[in-house]
Image (cartoon, rainbow, N blue to C red):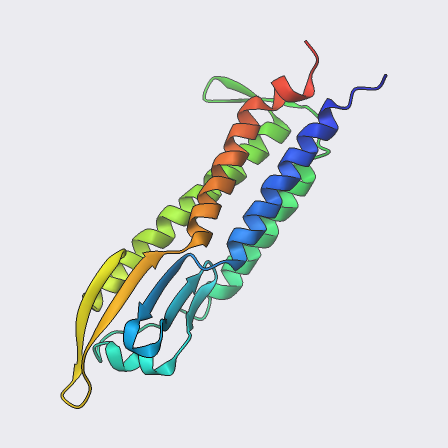
Amino acid sequence: MKNNRPWLFRILVLASVGLLLYSWFTPWWAGRIQELGGKGVVIHPWGLQVTDRHMLDYMPPEVNLAMPGWFAPVAWAYLGLIIAALSFSLFAKDKALDVWKVRFTLPSLIIGAVGLSYIVAIITAAAVITVRLADADLPLIGRTFVTVGSDIGTGMVSTDLGLGSKLAAAAGLMLIVLALLRDRITHIR
């Protein structure tokens, strides 16, 4: 009987890719305003989306929510590169490589590097969001009251990490674990 273990591994990697893609399209962070019926700002890995233009009334005038023009194309290129790398790793030869005196196979190294890079992307996104929110005196996670102006009054803003950031962390960790366990999964001992 032919060894089906490499195909089992490929299916696990493809499941991780599916989770990664789902996390990419699910919001990583959201700021919602109670007075606007829960609408506000949603952040995806490729940029920020204002779900209600009245949200801008709740921001101090010096706060700029716009991302640099190069950010979205770079984010989409990153997604394309990691998907291409994972696709390549599914059928790459088991060439042995030494990294810091540790022996890896080429597919394991690629899968682990993609998982690690996705974890770094999540941490970087959280850091950038925190810095940008500090300009508006908003927390990364929590609730706060903001003054909107003399004619509007105050409003409650709720901020939280979205499901996408949690799924992204799971996808990144899953890829790292698969990279570490690849030889045990694919080879009969």
